Image 1 (tube, rainbow, N blue to C red):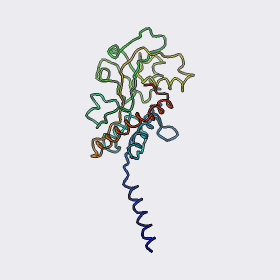
Image 2: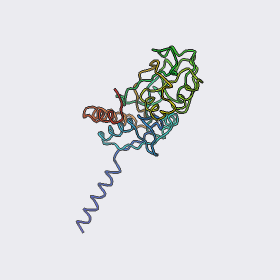
Image 3: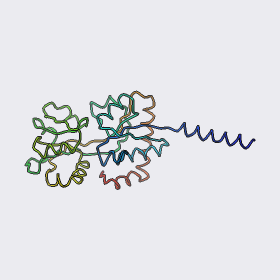
Image 4: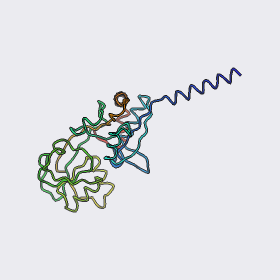
Length: 248
């Protein structure tokens, strides 16, 4: 009888320990590979694996749910999700979310034109008065996001923006270089030789934005920072970069 009581007690301790383990629920951008995307119904990509690895180091379980970017932002803002990624901290977003200290990654937003374009080495200010395709909800830096003279055409996916550019419906398309390169590979028959990079719009640090609704957000942000420090020191971050072909 004593052995049975002890066994039940130990099982209850294990169950309580499992139930007490930290868990954070994050929205992951559904269409931003290789950083984050929905593949066969599962969130995947470099950012997803970096966040998972960082929280593993911190002893926190993480549940990822894929959403279109604008929807992900809104659900995190309302507190339906604990947070959302991948987000650039610009003037508009800064007060909307709680932030961790160390970025998930650094990415370059390039300016693309049709391959026949003559202009090169453009910067954000050169886009004033021009028609530019951008993806709905994405941040491109204050020099673009707050410039009313840019004729912005919002599309649901980067792919759609490049198709607009190919058809001559806009002068330029803005896209993260790594994302664009993989799009060009995926749609090689349609896109090969159609575009060229003609400038850099913004150098961006990318973060998880945590909901201001939840009192636990500050703690989860701090734990993510601790985990990110560890995966950079132990080489796991570099391994994920190599796996997903992500340059520094």
